[in-house]
Amino acid sequence: MASAGRAGVGTNQEDVRRHNLGTVLGHVHRAGRLSRAELTARMGLNRSTIAGLVTELESLGLAEQAKPSGARIGAGRPSVDVRAKPGAYVLAVDLRVDGLTVARVGLGGVVLARATGPVPPGHDPEAISTSVVELMRLVVKDVEPGSALVGVGVGIPGIIRAEDGLVRLAPNLGWRDVPFAKILSARLGGLGVPVLGNDADLGALAEHLRGAGVGVEDLVYLSGEVGVGAGVIVSGHKLEGAGGYAGEIGHLPFVPDGRLCHCGAYGCWETEIGAEAIALAIGCPPERLGALGEYLDGVHEASPDLRIVGQALGRGLAGMVNMLNPRVIVLGGYLRSLFPLVHADVEAELEVHALTAPRELVRVTLPGLGGDSVLHGAAELAFEPLLADPVGRLSTACHDAEAALAG
Image 1 (tube, rainbow, N blue to C red):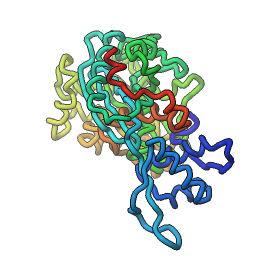
Image 2: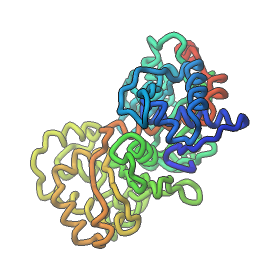
Image 3: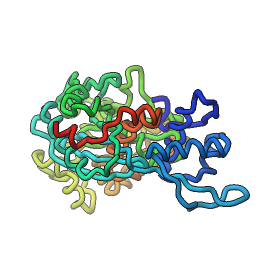
Image 4: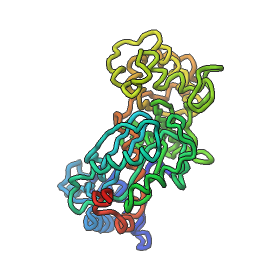
């Protein structure tokens, strides 16, 4: 992905009309609603060209015009608004170690329906794909007639090969070189091949586009589930690494001769701040790890053991501040509930271990999208082909997902 968001300065030449059409749709999709004057200013095209593109999006059922809602730009009458229509939708999947969430998400990032369920025991990929499809059937019921399914996106807590959706390593699922995109595609029938993304990368994408990092070009999203990963955006671009595997920050060596990690090494950072470390600190039994959020919600003051987890979180964040110099660090997963309890300990460690200059610039915060960051990121991933070429993608879209999934 060249950029965390699809930037867009268009041109009025006929041979790039589809590009301009996708660019207009991208702006409207991310904002939900924009005036035609704002679109004109953002894209650098003349008003008549923008009007034509908007009319074409209306004819495709992707947008509609509405009465002005914002301030006037320039002289004359207020410009007509353009808003996304949720008729084109995607199916987004957040696959976690301890649960599944599937949502139907319309253009504009609107969650239209959702369903949750447990992960099958043993994390068998075939069984998980069956569970995902069962949840998909629930969320496509009562879809508005004429709606089009344009993509399926899946967030996975692991290292994924982008070109074919092979999960190279998901240690907390017990997966190594699992072709999950192929497995799920076989269950989806005519719905096509799903697009897989690392959960932390998707969380960073969503928070950058719609959450706590809107307008921020340098951001880190820390996914704190059973494992810990980071999605990193630098100067508006996703940090990928040579093979697309950057961000496995939970497996940085942190404590010499520390606890055994699911990856097989000892002393990884996630063994000190991940779900199992939090559970141990608050007395949540290992067999109740899936209910850790409920246990954390019942904690009103940090114990000495929980403060140790907070201190480890702060020291690790200091290293990220020194190395990446982000403007915002977003704490997702179980870290959302942990941070308010250990805020003072995290800040104290940052003051001690982070360099002054980058420390002055960074803000540590909770997700603007709550617990849905990864889900929204999976949706954005699935929407990318539509935003690149609305006409082409709609020509291959599925207009009866319920029937396709039933088959």
